[in-house]
Length: 367
Image 1 (cartoon, rainbow, N blue to C red):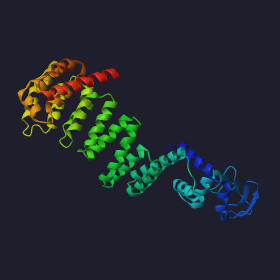
Image 2 (image 1 turned 180 degrees about the vertical axis):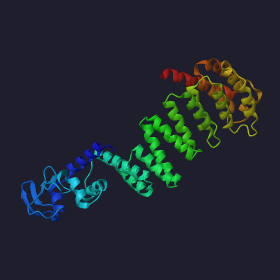
Image 3 (image 1 turned 120 degrees about the horizontal axis):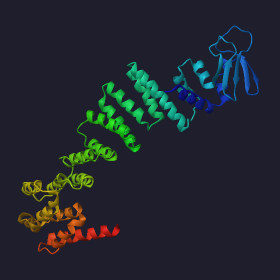
Image 4 (image 1 turned 90 degrees about the vertical axis):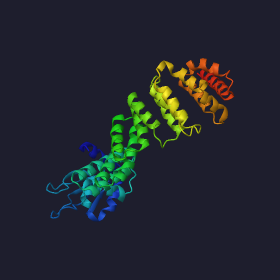
């Protein structure tokens, strides 16, 4: 941390002190004090030998100095500096002790500065390979500034170095959420890469990777992530469709997404226990040009004997699902097909087409 920032922190904490309370706390250290309003003269608590009172305290400004030039208290300093001398502690530890001794309630800006000072100390300890001490100081920093992404990453790194990668993941995950909230995409990407290296099978990380890629305008990466999510066997079919729909909004003309979407719809329905319809529909779609996608969905939902039979014999209504899928894929161009299907002799297809047309009409009127 820069010296001026540390000095600013000392001044902020010093300003919170009650000068008279501080003096009364340390009164026994100041021999034979003479009080002149808010000014006090006493024998110096740090050196002996002279026969006059060389130590001066200003209770209003909360400053001190010793007039004996060879004394370690020579020159001017704050009561916060004096507390460090009286406790014989390093400056950072003395600041923490000062806050605890006088129960100081630090404002948010001062707490952030204190957290940065503690984090800098933790990094120094880390460089010296004092891992336990570094972790203890970093925990204090996080207590002062709970939303600090930098401190969370620091704690995660320390946990890794101490052989506890499992403990590092929650710190990385919370740091990732903060980075995403701050729209710090570069930092978010770096943190996510670290998480993926520690736990490569987490579906949630793929989802976050898609979010970051989309926010950065990297639609190709986002689509790749959504396709990955849409293919996870441990994800419910309805959720798979949701990911694939996200991919379709980014690349509406990509046939692979359409194929996967239809595949997911078919796979998610208990209509095809042997996978025959799913296999057939997938094979039918593989060879399509983009211009044919709606007509082929129409054919699958409307014209094939297997699916027409299923629409009549199974209450789950697989073809009806595909009818609604047409409306989602391209509401404008699908209207022509849906009007044809609304007159179909099959009641399941007829009802589904009518509902799809109503949904498109409602959506259009709302815009």
